[in-house]
Image (cartoon, rainbow, N blue to C red; front, side, top):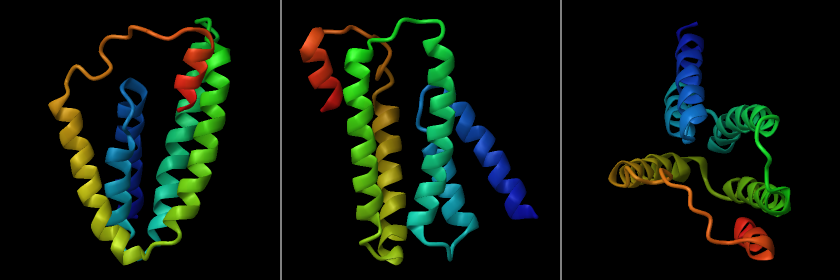
Length: 140
């Protein structure tokens, strides 16, 4: 039961962070790794990512009802993200769970440090591409 409470609290915090700025996985993944030390890392990565994907889809659906979205750029980006996600999910199954358990905290700390050192990251949105250039850039 304490594991369930820990995961629920972490999920709420991760969802809150994800709804504001993204990056909820920086909260949920370490908690899942700590609470379930014998679970395969690929399963925990998938669990964390699935929660964030559903939250993002819900938020995007709500947002799209209020704002006109550039679908010509979003569709290639969505397709590329799906292909990249499938490839990444397959790739992580090729590595040993023990090796990933040592590598993931380092990767999460690097990501956290980068985020903290760039407080202006994402603050200003100034599109510099249009038309096909925007779609190509979104899919890269």
